Length: 254
Ligand code: MN
Image (cartoon, rainbow, N blue to C red):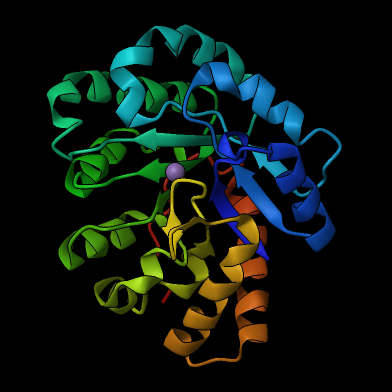
């Protein structure tokens, strides 16, 4: 199984979540919300071959943590993965829009100078703006829009730009999202849980809950769940190959 966006450091007992992921052989992208959280979160995965820790600056914390940008710039050499980064256009975050823009553009500029990274990107109520900023930094790496919730037009533009998508059980509960997932290129889809923020039945989701997403994807793609697993692992491998490309790849595969 693959969980390409989980906040391992924010579970009440992160070590037990890591152990269970190890037992189940789950590939995890462990994202962070601040640069200062990276070293401690990376230590959680020490000795684990399937967990990668991404360096993040969450848009909802941009105004409080922009002073951590120099630390972000120092740590970028230590990881191939960046996230959670992006923009948030919701009412609570809109007052800090300029801080969010400053942080996100600086993050993408840093990634470009470092030769490109794999990026897990937040775009709630800000898909259009995220795409506009990504276009300005074609060497930033491979963008993965996590829990995409924009319009179909925005999705089409993201696909044209070369974006990937990570989708999870919470997102798959929405009929609109299911219809959109059907239009995403299968070769650019990964699964995620986004726990412990994302919840289902009033419980925080865990990396192993991506199994629920596998069933939904099997129905959407009209293939057996075993084929979903094969496709996703193939995608994870090709994403790894994109690491050293260092640019957005505009492709038309479906
Ligand atoms: Mn998240």
